[in-house]
Each structure stands twice: as structure tokens, then as C-alpha cells.
Image 1 (tube, rainbow, N blue to C red):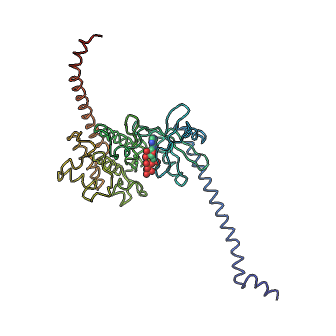
Image 2: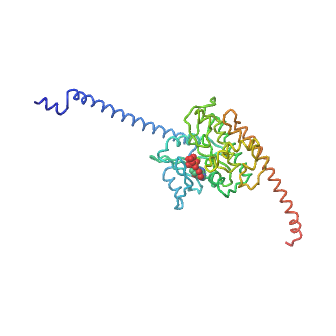
Image 3: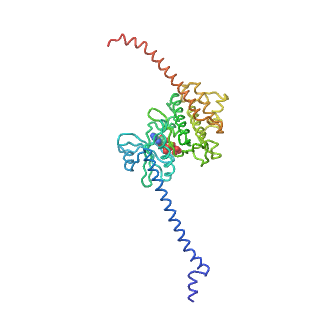
Length: 376
Ligand SMILES: Nc1ncnc2c1ncn2[C@@H]1O[C@H](COP(=O)(O)OP(=O)(O)OP(=O)(O)O)[C@@H](O)[C@H]1O
Ligand SMILES: [Mg+2]
């Protein structure tokens, strides 16, 4: 009777064994979870210590959260400069009065892009790369503090209806970006592939000098490596089709994205225009124009009002079309691109100087006469 009662509690003798066996299984599972949590937190602490180490040798300033909050709320108002996939960017003012841009990373996006940005950017210094001043880790919060670029990103200027970007400024921006890329691709520790060259990652300072930003996706290749197989990341429209199909990343992938930016600077067009037919999409139109199938004026940004040097325009178009070749083997190296753009830029500057001198000499002749005769 007792036995049947027990059996009624545990069920059949088979299920009694099952219940007895499940106890150690549950304990084992709990132990495993505890070990994994401990390992993860150890890894997290190690990564944090590693980042602090990087910050120490790189000269990055380690901000505390209070300093970040004071900088962001300086003067009582919080100014948002923009929002990206990694988080929100605010204007900040340091106690010295220096303006900075503070990126507050969203919690889901913190560790990977934060580490890449800190590890990557802290080693890179170039006049055309946005400078990382410091960072902040407190609890789950992550902040990155950059030099402030007063004129925001290139898309904000190029794509607006009343864009005031002159031909000379556009040429200089392109030359400067290729200069920054040349530095990255020939870095002493191996080629740094940016992986996210696009209009919004080209920032402009108060003098409209270009600064390449966002190293959250950057990949450093070993000195002897010319390619690396990796996850396909980037922005649709700017991504190298070869890398998209085989996940083989090379410097040429950046050259492709740079070519797209160059085509946009010439045409003022978005990468994908939903209201245009396929014939008028950026790369196809550029190829047709460069081969003489369509007139040059078909590709010229109407916002330039014809104030363009045709020879230089054609030269840049030819380079850009080569950069966006479907096969990476057909693309020029960034050094070659830089050389060509530097030439165009110098020509443009000389021409501008000549024009200025001419207009000065024509305006100064009569006025200088009158100023001589004018009583003081
Ligand atoms: N150093 C800076 N100075 C001034 N403005 C900045 C600075 N850094 C970023 N911004 C502004 O904040 C915006 C958001 O930047 P963020 O890099 O987070 O995203 P994004 O590049 O626009 O987009 P995505 O996340 O898709 O790459 C930029 O487009 C830019 O206008
Ligand atoms: Mg960006």
C-alpha cells in the first residue's frame, strides 16, 4: 500500500530513475551557466583593462561620466549633431572652452565598434582624419570624444537643393579624402581598410577641410596580407560588389566606395535615386558619359551653375569611373588616385589665383588712380 502510494507520487519506477538523474543534470547546467557568466565578465574586465592600457599609451584622455555630462550640457542646452547606427552625437564644450563632438553609443552597439574605434583611431593621426581625443566607459555607458567639425557632414552640403559647395572646394575635399585613404592603406602596421567610406563619414571643419570619420568597421590587415575574408559590412550603394559576393576584403574595396563619393561630388546625385530610371543611376550614367555616349553636361551637378573647369571635370570623372570598376583588379591604387587628384587640385588653385590677380589688377588700376588724387 505504501509502495503504491510512493509510486503514485513519482509515477512508474522508470520515471523515478529519470527524476533522480535529472537532479545532477540540472546542477551541471547551473554550474555551466555560472562558469560562462564568470568567464564573460572576466573577458569584459580584461577588455576594459586592455582599453585603459590603449588609452594610456595612445595619449587618449579617459573622461569620467560627470565630465561628459558637463560637456554635453554646457550652457544648459544639449545639442544633438546627428544620429547614426551606432548612437547619437552631441556637441560638447570642455572646461577650456574647446568644442568637441561626443558620440553616445547605444547599449546594443557598445563593445565591438567602441573597441575598434578606440584601438584603431588612437593609433592613427592625419590632418584629414577626425581626431579622437578621448573616451569614457562607466557601467554600461560608452562615449567617444572627437574633434568638432563645425560644418557637419558632406551629405548635408552636397545634397541640399541650394548647395553652395564650389567646384574648387569639391576638388579639395576629394583630394584630401584620397590623402587620408593613402595614409590608411599604407599604415606602418599594415593596411587599414576603412570599410565605410560615404558622404556622411566625411566631415567638414570650419574651413571646409575634409576629415574622414567613423572607424567602427575598420579592419587592419597584416603587413604581408593583401586580402582578408571577413563578414560583409558597410553601406548599401557604397559597397564593393566583389567584396559583397565573396566576402574578400582588400584595399580596393575602399577605392570603390571612394569612386562612388567622387561621382556624387561631380553629379550632386544620391547613390540610389528611387525616382530615376536605371539608365540614370550613378555608375551607369558615369560610364556612359565617360565613354562619350552621353554629353558631359548630363553628369554635371546643376547646382554648380556651369562654374566648372571642363578638363578637370573630365579628368576626375575618368578616375572615378576606374575606381568603380566591377573587378577590383581593374581599379587604380589610392596612390595613383591621390596623384591625379593632387594634380587637378594644384591646377585649380593656380587658375583661381590667376583669376584673382587679374580681377585685382583690373579693379585696382582706376581706383588706385583715384586714391592717389583723393585728398587724405
Ligand atoms: N566630430 C564630429 N563633428 C561634428 N559632427 C559630427 C561629428 N561626428 C559626427 N557628427 C555628426 O553626427 C552624425 C552622426 O554620426 P555617426 O557617425 O554616428 O553616423 P552616420 O555616419 O551619419 O551614419 P551611420 O551610422 O549609418 O554610419 C554625422 O552624420 C555628423 O553629421
Ligand atoms: Mg559616421
